[in-house]
Structures are given as C-alpha cells and as structure tokens.
Amino acid sequence: MSRVDIIMSTYNGEKYLREQIDSILTCNHQNIVLHVFDDGSSDETIQILAEYKHRYENNLHLYKNHRNLGVTKNFLNGIKTVMEHFKEATYFMCCDQDDVWHDDKVSKTLKRMEQMEKRYGVDRPLLVFTDAVIADENLNEISESFIKTQHFNLNKIDLAHLLMENKCIGCTIMINRAFEYYLSHTPNAARYHDWWLALIAAAFGHISYLPKATLDYRQHSANVVGSINFSSYVRRRMSSIKDQKLTLAKNRDQAEEFLHFFHEDLQRHQKSIVEEYLKMFQSNFIKRRYIAINQGYLKSGIIRNCGLMLIL
Image 1 (cartoon, rainbow, N blue to C red):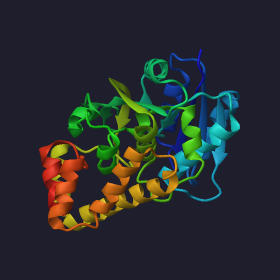
Image 2 (spheres, rainbow, N blue to C red):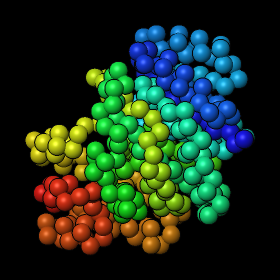
Image 3 (tube, rainbow, N blue to C red):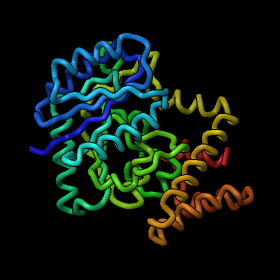
C-alpha cells in the first residue's frame, strides 16, 4: 500500500483540531503519516498535538516554527522539509486545521494520482485536486460543491489561465515526489501554496481534477481563506476597485518570481507564456486587454472577465 504523507499547517486551531486529526488518522487508507507544522500557536493547539503525538507516535510528527511564517510559506516549507527528510515518502497532501476529511479522501485521490503516473510517468510533477462540500462551523451542509458555487471553468487549467486565477483547492490537493526539485527554494511572492504548486504542475507536468467532494470545507469566523457564494464574490469585487488592482499586482509579482526561479527550466513556449503575461502589464490600455483575451490570461466566466477588463 502506497504511503501518503500529509502536511498540516496549524495556528491557534484548538477549536476544531481534534475533529480534523481524527478524520485523517481513521480514514480507510492505512499507510498515512501526518506532519504538523505549527506556526506559533498561543492557545491549546500544541498541547492537543502533543497528546495525539503520544497516541500515534509512528504516524504523527510535530514541528514548531521558530517564527511565524504565514500559511503559504508554512505549507511550502513543510512540504519541502518532509520531502528532504523522508525519502521513502512518495505522495503528499495538504491539510487545513479545521476541516473534516471524508473516509475515502486519500484513497480516491491516490487512485487518480496512480492513473496519472501510469499515463505521464513518475518523473513529472503531477497534481490532483478534488471538489469539497461547503459546510458551516457545525458541519451543516451549505453547498454540495465548492467548484459549482464558485463557477470555476475547469477546462481552463493551463499555465496561461492559472497565472490569472487559481482553481485548485489547497485542502484537496495531492502531489507526487517529482515536485521536490521545484521546491528547493521557498518563494516570497507566492499568493497561496496551492496556487504555486498548480503553476509548477501546469508548467512542468500535469493537473487532474477529480469531480468528487472529499472533505467538509468548514466555514467560520477565523478562516484565513474561506468560501463565499458567487453573488457575494461579485459584490465584494465591485465595491473596491483599488483592492482588485492591488490583487492583480500581486498576481504579477507571483508570475515574476516564478519566471525568476524557473527561467532555465521552462521550455521556450512555457517561458514565453509567462514573459508575455508580464509584458502585458507594461502595455497601454487597449493592448493589455487584447493580450489578455488573445493569450488566455483570463478568469472563469463572463462576469469575472468583465471585471478583469475593468481593472486591467
């Protein structure tokens, strides 16, 4: 049975932590190792983790950051650390501290990953992501599908589209060991860990979406990144053009660092995609919009792209 190493990021997560860990360590895939990277919790999180480490000595490792890294760097640093120190590990998943995994989450995702490896080989970075049930803080279902709620176009998960919009839900993803080479340095401009991993997979390997909800994605007041319904998303975007321009600038910074890290590894076509994306921001009003439409630097759906054309 293939081993799956799970990287969890924690920060003051005492409220829901036990329920999440229980759902992971009692799932139907038995060969699991959980690595928890705590980012400086000041509540009872460390005590809870110490309790579980004592109970699951061989299946849970606890790491305490010397300083707060923030969720994105904590995840990327965690994945890198596990890959470096556990060479026997083959597959890696990311895990939030407050969700609840379904019993078959690991096994279903792993099955799709193994199918991808048979098709593409094990030497290319492969990423699988799934859907999720959106639930309230008491795990009452809000929506059966995160993907449908967000109106994501999953036919557009190529590099060009991913430079503008991430569609891969971080708490659902699995990656293979071929990512190790591309994670040797931790980026400063990465928007989110799942987005950075998706860019790597799109540029150097492949991405596959499994249309199945594999966890309850809990929404509560302390979410760092959560789900909002699509109408709320639109209202929020329209209410602050300045914030949206700032977000677009952060997307550009992420692409710039991606090119800096991997300019020698990218094939000519892929390198050109990133370079043209960056040049777009230096062009005039008309040309920026022409390049975005012509090259596919777009988001999902008419409404999002109308908004993009407004702020680009």
